[in-house]
Length: 326
Image (cartoon, rainbow, N blue to C red; front, side):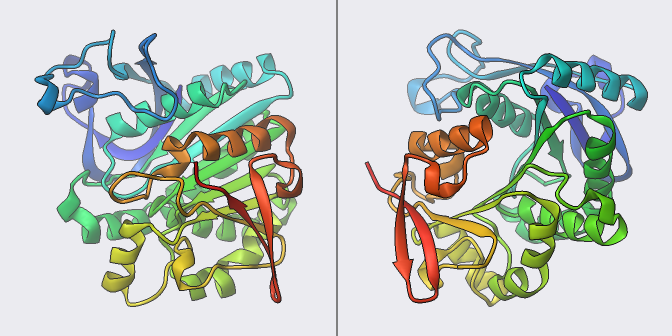
């Protein structure tokens, strides 16, 4: 996979294990490169297999776990040449950029991106942008500062992807706090460069940890300009977003329990009930039904009305889409 990051590379980069080559120090510069991830033959779709202490697993085993095998840097020109080659070799010229959320290390961002690409059977170039999350539950407020500080770099990288990747079908996928960086970067980009309006085939926002009023009034109009299709996944059972509401003092765009967001030009998909994990926050990576919906979106560029996992729900103020629980 391809990566870009404004994490600072650690000293003795090549001498350290791959998972330790980037920390959480913020850099104004973007580092480009590739990451190699192995996925076991026993992989279960939606799972990010990792060592489990209760099974007395303390070390990664490539035969059982999703493992980051290598990380290396590339000069920017070589990076986009290699990326564009992968795009050209795909049917349709496809690429996606995944931007992770809060409490995620560089290594886990790489592993998640590999799992996404593998489970989606994605034909094209999988790319992730890793901003300098502390990768700690206690790091919420520092992560808020880090994602805000990373907007210029994310904006620059998305512009480069639009200009240099050669992708005809270019998708952006943001999760949780990472959607703050994605949406603000796209808002800035279409204001500065009107010729990029509609350049992104699809924008996918999963469990966006964004103030609902800010999203509705300030971000949604710009997203409709940037993307040919915008999809927002939300849930009434997302405990992480309920906690964020308490911390930030306002409903979150990805929490349908406070009133589902229905906005012109945006497909809102309610996934309440599909995630059986404790936080119910990572459904777009873990629920096979949500993954199937995304797969249909990416493969055929299908609108919500033509995607089979979805059922329409008509309200007076508009329609949203529902993925029925198992």
